[in-house]
Amino acid sequence: MRGALAAVASICALSFGVASAAADNHKKQIDPRVSKALKASEAGNKTKALEMLQEVYHSDGSADVMFLIGKVREDLQLYGEAYAAYEEYLSRAEAGQHAGEARRRLEALADKVQVKVVIESEPPGADVHDGTALLGSTPLVAEVSPQQHVFRVSRAGYKTVEKTVKLAPGKPMTLQVALVLDDAEPDWASEASADGSQLSVRTNAKGALVMVDGVLVGTTNTRRSPVTESIASGVHAVTVHKSGLRPWGAHVRAEKGQTVQLDLGLGRDQSRGAKLASWSIGGIGAASVFAGVGIGVGALLDDDESLAESADVLILGGVTAVAAGVVIHWVTRSRPTTVKMKSSFD
Image 1 (spheres, helix red, strand yellow):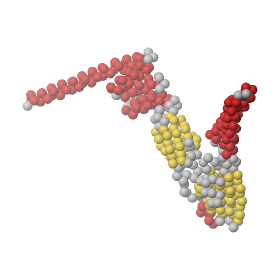
Image 2 (spheres, helix red, strand yellow; image 1 turned 90 degrees about the vertical axis):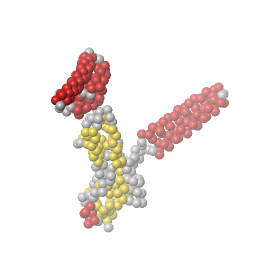
Image 3 (tube, rainbow, N blue to C red; image 1 turned 135 degrees about the horizontal axis):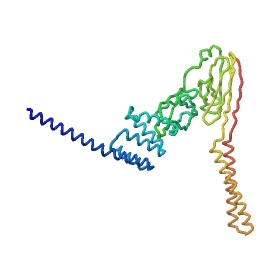
Image 4 (spheres, rainbow, N blue to C red; image 1 turned 90 degrees about the horizontal axis):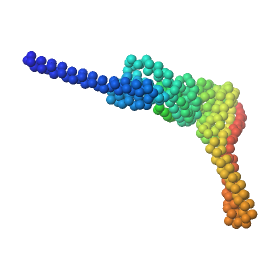
């Protein structure tokens, strides 16, 4: 019995010794490669040092090696990759010997590492806040730091949407937000029926949003079908807007029992594409006319009928193109908003 126990103990000791020897041998195999990589880095061969450290990390998986990789990447101005390396190190060695330095380096890199974020909403034109800072309105393209952000997307008449995202360096993100109409009643809704005042809005555009004091009260259809809303007497902020047209807004006063009627012709700005198309087509047409005239003069001097026919084609095509450019400009031209207001009492 004692002999058997002694044999088992010997086998365990031998196994432990073999395992320890293997671990020591592995450590001896890794450490010289790390030292060699650091020497290469000190000598200015950062790219070679990075390749060697990455090779060591793939075979060893040491968190400390990942920290060294981050430092070399930072020296090579690969700031996004360095940021990722320090984050990887901290995720594996939060209380490691390099943790404090890794956090300091992350803070220093925050200004150098920016992530592209695209935020779109339906409908567009919503304000986007990052915390308390206003970034702009949708569709929005912004550069922000690679960390957790709370984006707040808001538009009058719609429920506010908040999106919490964690952005990683070198990984752009696109957020698409579908806004939902806010059916909350305005503060004056309970008083409206007692006052007997009304607001009636007609527009030249189908689907325009009509808001009173920031609350959506209806969507226009046609001039024959106005948006009519009971309101409390007093002054109200009325806004009407539709994508692609100029928004309109004003303060409107309604007396008790009064009906205020608004007939709006929402204006528009000529789009950049329409401007480019009209001027390009018109310009090409004008050039064609001038070229045709020049060729025609040469044809007359040389008495060349074929050349004269070419000139006629150029002139005719040029005149047609100029006319097309004028038509495009006229149809898509900017138009002002027109307002007609009248009131009546029951």
